Image (cartoon, rainbow, N blue to C red; front, side, top):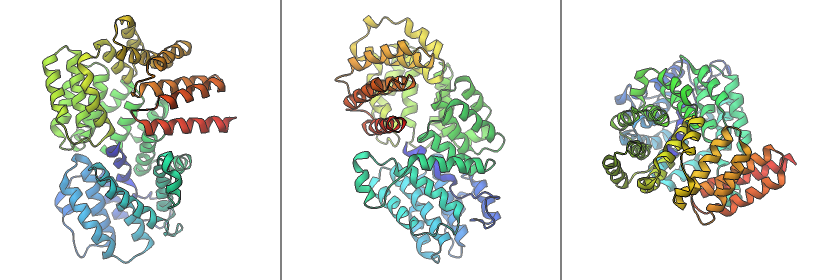
Length: 479
């Protein structure tokens, strides 16, 4: 999650040319930032060379460019130069609302660089400083920029764990997710042809919203012929999240080949879609990403998926070799990587057809996944995999509108995971609550949410608690 959060800020201040008369950047500055989106590493020498005579806009764009360039391959040179030169930016120019808005953006970017490298305290310090400066800025000076930053703070600060929200509020650190998402959506709709607006909105839907397949397809259609590699990466991530199957693969294969070269994380998403179709070429696609990408984000996850591929092919020697390599990984910057490092330990005993069904479900091929599960005799499964079997069967039944069957399977998962720390227990209860809510059965809905709270003792506990809290608030407001 830390890596993909950074995608949001690659476009914070590319201002719409029709939003207001006074632009945050000059026309030349806007064009330069747009070009940076498309070719992040086009002029490395200019990025790493500070100029004492540079204007405020020039130095802002250079630092912004360093941040974007870092996202391509996570080169430490770019991060280290950014950290060194942002201090100079703060004192080099006269203080004004324009300079302060630029500094706030750069400080947020700095916090994300720190978090991506595991420097959580430094990241929190930069983020708090950004928020403190932001609260002093006149909202009327550059309203578009101010409103965008306000939306971002609303969204990000809404993610503070419930247990800490009161204490955070004492320091003015309060967010409103619904308000922030609404502001971002409005901005995107107002600036329909502005790439910055689409990146911002698409990213928020990816990480904090509930974008469905229909909305994702609309965003993809709107971006045709003008999308940067960064925007396409966010849209590809949405396609994977929404299990778009062949539609997702068609979109990714319509992207120009040079974008995959300039932004290797696109190769990662492309390979995931291929594997979700059980494509025999998926291993090569994953290997292409691993060979071309010098960063750490999603690398362990990609290796786990290669191990999955060999497990499905019954090539145990290559599978075990990859498992050993994964165990040696020390840099796990994303949630995907940390989960992969943990999950791969059980791979040798995972029933092959259960893994295939999981991949087909993730790809949106629900009938194929259901057919595979129907070939498995639950009585022959170890108790550890029995809960997963019913969980995946229930999820598939939900997509096939078999809600009664889904509830029955979710109930079995809840029963089997009373002493299990995996996420599937509380997730099963939350999914059952959703079905009950759709049937207006509030009593059973709350019952399942209580079950989810009781089972929430392990994986993703903070995120799951946030989901449960939001769900309960939704029910309270509906009654």
